[in-house]
Image (cartoon, rainbow, N blue to C red; front, top):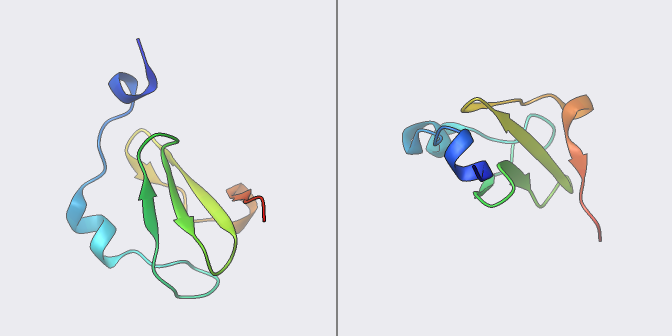
Length: 64
């Protein structure tokens, strides 16, 4: 079973209203990794069980 089968999809309406909690900038959805990406903050917020975890301490730092 691959990751896409295990993780429920994120509601597109939710993606439209979510912003980065640090920069208040837009986020992009990385379906392959199951993350919301904040290019401005350089962070990737995880999505667990279809729920975005919008905590900076839970985010992964993106490589430059």
